[in-house]
Image (tube, rainbow, N blue to C red; front, top):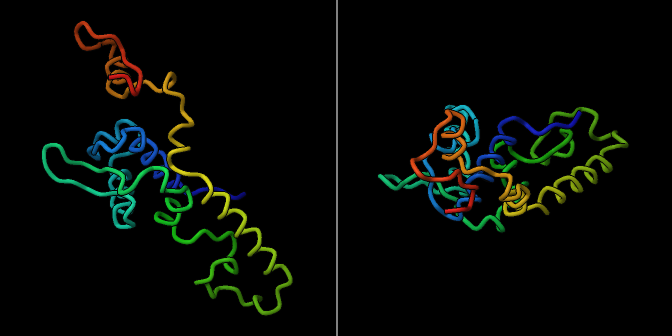
Length: 166
């Protein structure tokens, strides 16, 4: 089975949440609560994404993490590579790997590289903006409203708002 790592999966979820904020920085604790990703895992992911220059961090009262560039300029492949390294289905498809002793004799090597290239191109063809848009606004409850609703409370005199409604 070919499966995305948990780190990459959660990273995409966290970045999708940030993309929906349209450039507003968010605290790591808020991102962890909004995405239901454990705070320690959220912190690890945010640091790796900042190191890969997909995020910028700002200190201070209005600080937090924000996208380093527009969501249209970040691909799913960028995110996966920032968190997991090069996309490679087999060791022979990874240009940095020298693990395979059969490599000089392998008749499948060229096809594995072709398959790997097709998968990488597919992932590079999907932007973070597209991932964020995949959740219709009408179905995405604002995190604050959702937290209040889960406790049976809401802000005095205010209706529960949908994400994007201010």
